[in-house]
Length: 284
Image (tube, rainbow, N blue to C red; front, side, top):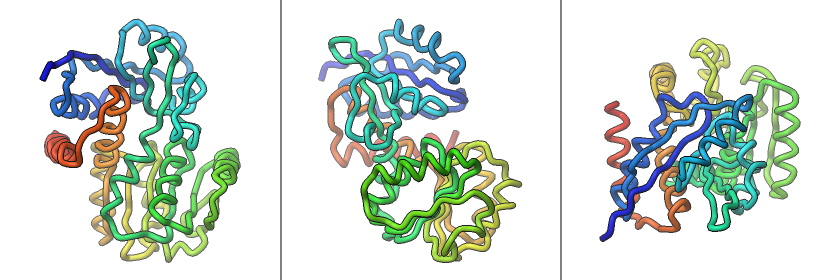
């Protein structure tokens, strides 16, 4: 098999602790490509135009996008995949043969895939109403969840998420609130609580009253790293089930790599990538 060197990148902030370089390096070992260089491009919305112009000169085969740039990437893209159009968010970019920027969303698949082997859920609560919450919401519907509550911090977030749900044109019970988690309707029936906020402290999570929820609850934190580990210890001390975002990251990364290079991994390859990545990342 001929091996082709390639370059990938990640844009957003904060990204210096990102595991994406490690993940894509592992994925490439199971493909006809080898990761020659992975570029971390630190940028927020105030400097994105200049940073993105510089990134275009790197001749990347693909670029991953993280907070706070996923909606920007959607509007920047000239061609959108079906999943990108569904979410209105893009977390993967590449250029076609004519130089047109293409946008894709693999967050939905990553979240779905990370839970597809779990027991079916009927009632879910999402904490946070940013871009990630849209992908989580779509994936929950694909998993068969019929009641979704969302807790957000600002009125405009609440309005945007309600409008997004209306555009989905799917029949499900949806409620969105601002405030303490005890304000959530039927919170005692919540079977999975998805944490999408990356900037809350442990003290803020404690103030939410998570311990008042269903004792069989799965707390799913889409984040990972030191802060997630601290939260994990707190959640487990409450006697609740916990899952971090590493598996979601792994599978959205696999799907993005497939899209970058128009290839498809076998289920066996995906399992090996998952095992290698989780082993390496949890020992980091």
